Length: 180
Image (cartoon, rainbow, N blue to C red; front, side, top):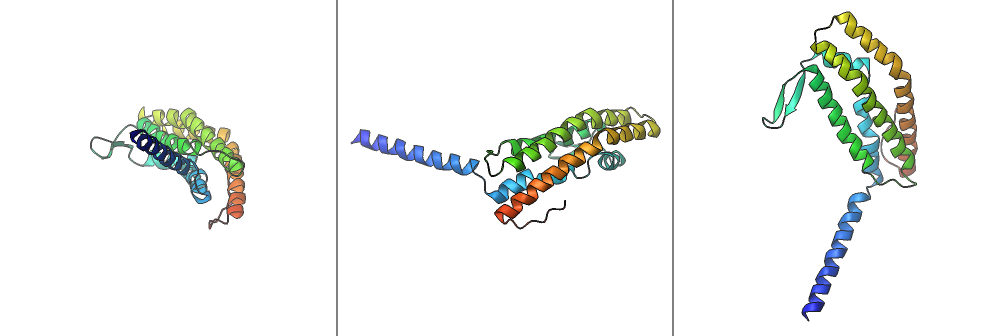
């Protein structure tokens, strides 16, 4: 009797675990769209717009101990923002890829990986210039050079994602407006 009870309990635990596991990895089309496409709004001001805006405001990072934003160097503030993008990127990579969402996920991953890499290569050195009190002309030249080397590529990756998102929204009848 005890063996049957143990076997039944084990069987029920396995079924429950399987259901929970499956439900966590199989996101609805709406949730997939939200994670893969809507997170790209974080990149909509990529380049000089975003850099200039951040350099005009006080540099801050979130202090976990104090549970609030605190003053920091520009370098640390930019690094903090990149870390947040990497967290969003990981949530995209965590979505199980299938034939239905493959184009959307690949376009999103391509955009995020490019943007993060370019922010590390470009934003961080510009932030360091600001922290080191470089001349405004030096900083603006670095920003202009950054835009010149990245803007057409980021625009192409953004357009590719928006086209994939539009097709995904139409296919799944998701109530969303895509600006392409």
